[in-house]
Image (cartoon, rainbow, N blue to C red; front, side, top):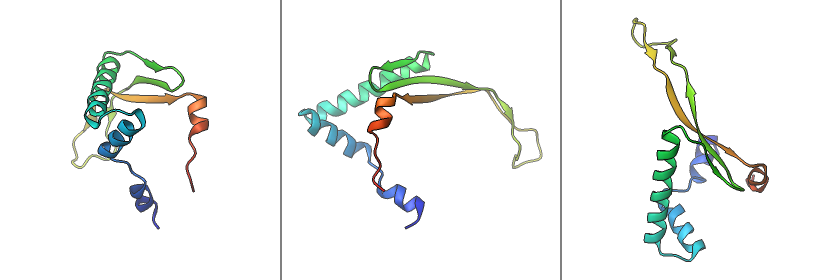
Length: 104
């Protein structure tokens, strides 16, 4: 089986994740969906304002800024550039990383 196919078969959709989250928490799917949406929105708002969000015993979410640069292989002959940009980064705690066990 190819690597891309293997990765695709192990993918969990948002819908399935929310359903599993609801079942594990003993709450309705609607309540889990509301909590999921609120958590993601709040996380993105805080990090978008330059904050680091630390979830104790889980990890931290933080913005990482990258400097703009000239595009090396532009499709046209012009001098294309990428402006400065920021991405969301996540750093798991050691305990979380130890708990991650991928079945081979």
